[in-house]
Amino acid sequence: MKNLCVLISGSGSNLAAIINACHDGKIPAQINCVIADRDSPGKHHAFQAKLPFLMIDRRLPQAEFSAALTAAIPPDSDLIVLAGFLSIIPPALTEAFARKIINLHPSLLPKFGGAGMYGLNVHRAVLAAKEKESGCSVHYVDNGIDTGEVIARARVPVFPDDSPASLQQRVQTEEHRLLTATIAHLLSLPTATTHTH
Ligand code: GRF
Image 1 (tube, rainbow, N blue to C red):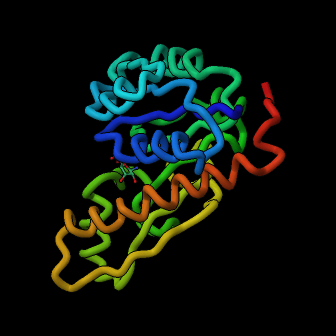
Image 2 (image 1 turned 180 degrees about the horizontal axis):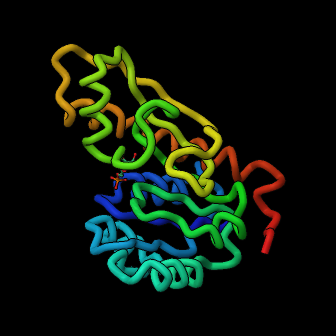
Image 3 (image 1 turned 60 degrees about the vertical axis):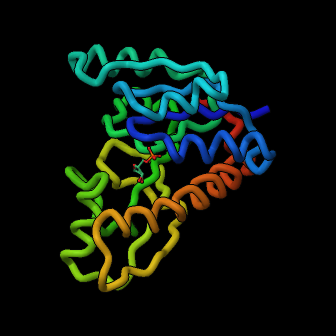
């Protein structure tokens, strides 16, 4: 059985989608640990599913936070999924788990990525730019912000009467589908079983 480690900061709707997909067999894996960087409401999904959960406070001094996060990732993780995780991943982890850490971003990267582009900020920027379509992307995590190679994208239309919240809702529905399908795909690749550390 392959192992997924899931990192969250927010409401955990993507975590819930991953839990359901593992349960239904759409993702042939188990979640070995859920890690939050704050008192995230999403933790209740981990509790409900009786998954190992831990919180590493993002307000710790950066070196301490990085060391704690690096130590917390189970070494047998086949894939580390940032499902709305807002803290920066330390280089020690991106090197140890090269091409095994993926992030979900609520825009069609490379558009509307980078520092400050998270949550409703992204959808506000999309509306301000009068984009006709938006969507979400899953990408490998490197040492930049939203700069790693894009693995998959899903598109949604932007309607003239959209608010940032209505657009966010449309994108999130696609996120759940895209993230679970991409995880299943990546786990089916032979390289996903090779540990580099
Ligand atoms: C998602 O919109 C994701 O794209 C972004 O953070 C949000 C997390 O939502 N990175 P949730 O906590 O999974 O509900």
